[in-house]
Length: 428
Ligand SMILES: *Cc1c(COP(=O)(O)O)cnc(C)c1O
Image 1 (cartoon, rainbow, N blue to C red):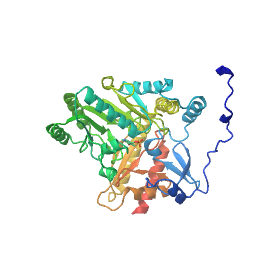
Image 2 (cartoon, rainbow, N blue to C red):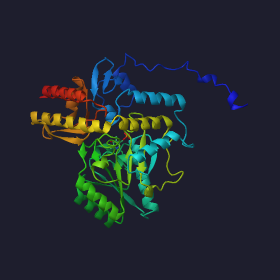
Image 3 (tube, rainbow, N blue to C red):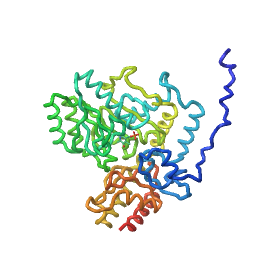
Image 4 (cartoon, rainbow, N blue to C red):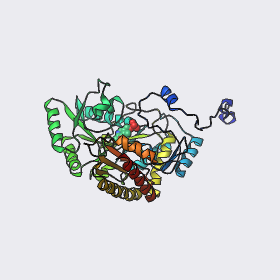
């Protein structure tokens, strides 16, 4: 029988399609009985979004300055994203990496054209991208540098993911507690402290192990919105070159325009050897990517893989996000809206010096630091803001993080800061 005359399977009908409407009788305790309680959830359920706004089951509207935690780059229901994912799912949504996937190649080329990378590997999340980076660095250390026991140095207060290797890389004991034994081959240094780094490298050398890579965030996101120090990163790059240490940057939260430049490292006057991306890369469709310079691409067929990695659906979304950032000049919007947001938040710090210390950030990733010595926490402020119709996300117990979609308008920034101020005035 020829393939042309084959009739479609009768099982491919749409008769069983489930309409994606939410259950208005939704009940949080039923939810918690069914879904593992790994998240401390705020008591609201979101069911619809448009631009920088979302609506809950009660029909209440919120300004979304969380954006899926720095993920919904183009906001909600952006027409370009809606159009491309609709087209792609009607055409071909998933095929195996047993075959060539043209749009995967196109997205890789787009990343290469807009970064220092020469090669890309696709996966589905930030942790998975960092796992890829760790495996690549270890393979390079073993096969090219002849290091038998390679060590990767990461920073205290960092965040690299929740898999066993990336939670080990994450320099925060609270994420590691009860999951030991952790992965061997990691050491930790304080962030932005060059002298401490030199001392740690010397100690590792003395113990007959060798540092294969240093993995850092260009700006620490979860750890409290702490930007990398220019001078530190310049000295670090020089040190890595001299000692043949790979420099890996985790750009999962700050990459793809979030900081007003395509990549966080562009703020630091350096280029990494390996870097990773995920959160904002496909605007909220799951994707991860690990990039490297040509010299470090030591992976061979069979070394690393991911079933869903780089499928046509996610890659079409990623390509559309990238092209939209360029076409709509979103980097400029991020820079301008970021300035506006920081100056308005600084005014809040001045008005409430008994509560807040400072504002930190680049572009549209910003943190408002609560005074360490007072009882108020970031969760208190976030809860107060929810009541005022504004979604924010903590970055640790004392920092409130602002990561709106990159399309946010000047009027929306004004509204958000006004809502925050109403919340703060009620908390004191
Ligand atoms: C969120 C995040 C990760 C983990 O990403 P997942 O997609 O949740 O696995 C890793 N690194 C950084 C810097 C992040 O912000």
